[in-house]
Length: 328
Image 1 (tube, one colour):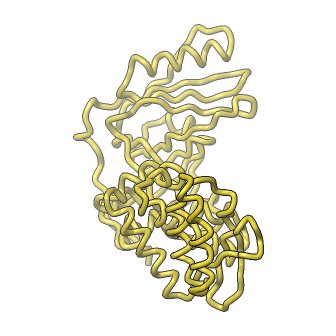
Image 2 (cartoon, rainbow, N blue to C red; image 1 turned 135 degrees about the horizontal axis):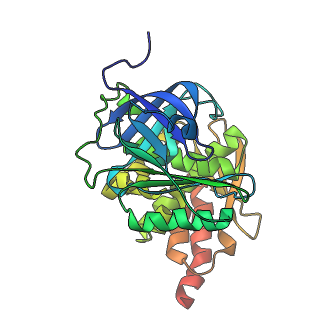
Image 3 (cartoon, rainbow, N blue to C red; image 1 turned 135 degrees about the vertical axis):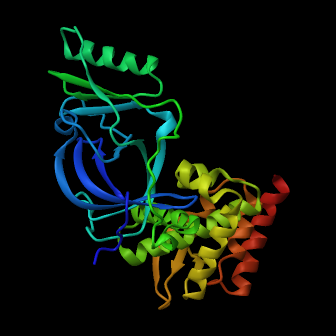
């Protein structure tokens, strides 16, 4: 039995990086976004647009900027933008059957069933001129979706004629596993991805995530919200909203309950922050507090979050920061 059946869940998804097309089943997580399950590959979007596309069409808007090997640019469709927050079964996934919140939600354009599509003809003599002519059309046709694809030798263009409002948006059934795509899980996925980039080792990545969470808590305590711009995609920040600080606090507390803790290597003059795994092993290093100028109160808060430091060690570090506070 399939995970999700239901009327009106079928659609075609076109990956704008290469215009590969897939038959998908789509569900909606209320207030969050869409989830897509891939059934199979069905060719390429340009081929499909030569025929009548009956189910709704979902096109990712990120495109591909490599003009030498083949670029794709998507413009317009503002009234029909949505975000995909989860996928499963796509051949480009590292883990084919992984089904969890996307670290970076995918912005897509939803094209209702039976929408008219036209190939854009240009009189341009070069690929570059053709691209500019197609691109200029997107400045005029604000609601239509304009697709330009090709390379330095050849450029093709299409226009998908959308209505000015979204009253024709297709219905998608509710996602049966919607709890996987809460705002908290979206924040967690984004931070986990960032931590993995810092340390590819799984246990080291967990340690990096724990350090990130605690640095964010110290930021919040001093009224610094810049972490949201650095670590969370714009759509995830919007989903978290005013609950962002509470979400981070819950995620950090959950890791502490699992046995994670922080310490600082006081034998090193740069005072590196280190994560201690539940088995007591120091698994990864991060920020060097000794290299951070000013921000004395922030450093004091971070020291107080280092539950792997003894009371005397914490006291010594806090006293060490006092002269900096007097000079500030």
